[in-house]
Amino acid sequence: MHLRKHNIDRHQQEDFDVLVIGGGINGAASAAALAGKGVKVALIDRGDFASSTSMHSSNLVWGGIKYMESHDFPLVRKLCKSRNHLIKHFPSTVQEIRFLTTIASGFRYHPRYLWAGSWLYWFIGNGFTKIPHYLSSSDIKAREPIIDTAGSVGGFEYSDAYLHDNDARFVFNFVRSAMDRGCAAANYVESLGAKREGQRWIIQARDVMTGTSYEIRAKVVVNAAGPYVDQHNALSGERTEHQHVYSKGIHLIVPQLTEHRRVLAFFADDGRLFFVIPMGRRTCIGTTDTRVDSPDVQVTDDDIRFVLDNINKRLTLDTPLTRDDIISTRCGVRPLAVKASSGGDRDFLQLSRKHVIDTDAATHHLSIFGGKLTDCLNVGDEIVAAVKELGVEVPYGDYVWYGEPHRAVREEFFHQARLLGLDEMAPHHHEALSTRLWRRYGAQALDMLEEIREDPRQADVLIEGTEYLRCEIRQAQRREMITCLEDFLRRRSKISLVVKAEEIRNAPGLREACEILFGDEADAKLDEYLASAQAQSVEERLSADAQAADSQVNNPAHSETLKWR
Ligand SMILES: Cc1cc2nc3c(=O)[nH]c(=O)nc-3n(C[C@H](O)[C@H](O)[C@H](O)COP(=O)(O)OP(=O)(O)OC[C@H]3O[C@@H](n4cnc5c(N)ncnc54)[C@H](O)[C@@H]3O)c2cc1C
Image 1: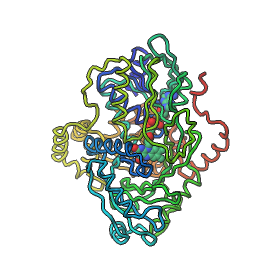
Image 2: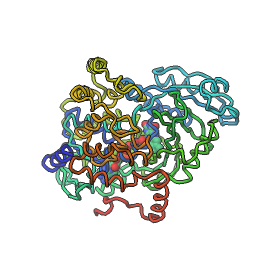
Image 3: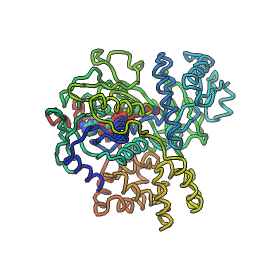
């Protein structure tokens, strides 16, 4: 909390080169790139970092094989290169994974045609991954017995990548990297709009936790508000060439369906790609693609029925999945960039998923439209170039702002972990403790070893039913700007994705976690969490959402933002 307070003080005392509005992947990567290259930058998000679209993705880092069908080869090439770059620079976080794709009889393409396409995809991606394979139905069954191959005519296996931990954690690590390089980042600070005065912007900000308003001064504004970019531009009087249309997508998290670490890909009843994605001891299934008019969306009964029906039709599980198997849900909108003049009328499933940065050189304002997690390094680099073009000095232009720590640091960590017997301290964990700590905390994991050496209790699991250690929660308290319990449970960790809400609520260690995270405010923060929607079971939340949806018809304005003008 000190960190957040200090950064909010800085917002009021300092003049910034750039203010980034929105701490999803686009804002986080922009802030990390700018800060790394020596630009004086601030970052705000009206919720927690990555609390909007960027925590609801499929966790895939992929070259967009499905965009080959719409012949968007330049986009596929760009995304494949980004994917390769991320695998290379984040080897413990972004990992290659096989996609086993099953084709049903009567599908619009024969498996051999699609297999040929997967070779083209492989070439477009510079042959960076393992080669594709053609598979007969019996090959598929041998590789993955839970797939129902009765109606299948074969398929193929190819490679892309996925985020081992979680999209929100991936985003936070960029925010943290920006803070390490001087960025004044704060979550739960909302921009109520910005006005240009002379050579600078005055941004009206509101600390959502206290309700206090204050001003932030910056030469350049980067609007990275994701699905809310248009809304914020309207508040600041900015007109742009592009705007957003929205596509809603949901995922369901269920118990682990298969022990094999690969993505199972199918074409759902609506003809779209549909995935079964590994998530540790859980499985993530989805997604959907529904055009919606507002970015504020919830999982509905129809969404759940669609996902369950489709998965049950394609797998031969001992007992079909039902609503009772759902541990948690994910639901967000893809912000898709369209030319404002087009009115967004094109067939939206065919809309390109590429990002666009609109620059208003007269007012020094940038808006980021669209994009993907996979594209984040390009977004960061392009924002630095655009800011430079607007006349802001970039003192360390050659600095490489992304990537895991140097190999020597990694080797030292694993050596010390071996000497300490770290992995033996958690023999029943899903993966080796040293591997997980390194992936999540990088060089900071060395400090955690020191804590465990001083006090072996630091290696104990604190919240029963999870694999998170006491020292991780202390680390989160110091460095991860945990403002509400859900920030830790859902975004810095993935506890509330993989453990049912009722189990978390009743976990005895939850109180101690709050004491570590919030000190004197522990009781208040725990009560706040227990009273929140996040602490409800999926069933409780669905019925509450349904009631809320009924009462919010024709009232899309849930935010203070719309009240400001
Ligand atoms: C179902 C689904 C699956 C997807 N799967 C993948 C995938 O597998 N791989 C991939 O690469 N991409 C995927 N994507 C796309 C990707 O998730 C998004 O493109 C990306 O997360 C968008 O990031 P963003 O930073 O633009 O927006 P967001 O993550 O929404 O961030 C915008 C932030 O701005 C903040 N904000 C808004 N208004 C204000 C304000 N007034 N003041 C302060 N802050 C504000 C919000 O709180 C929010 O945190 C998927 C998307 C969806 C919906």
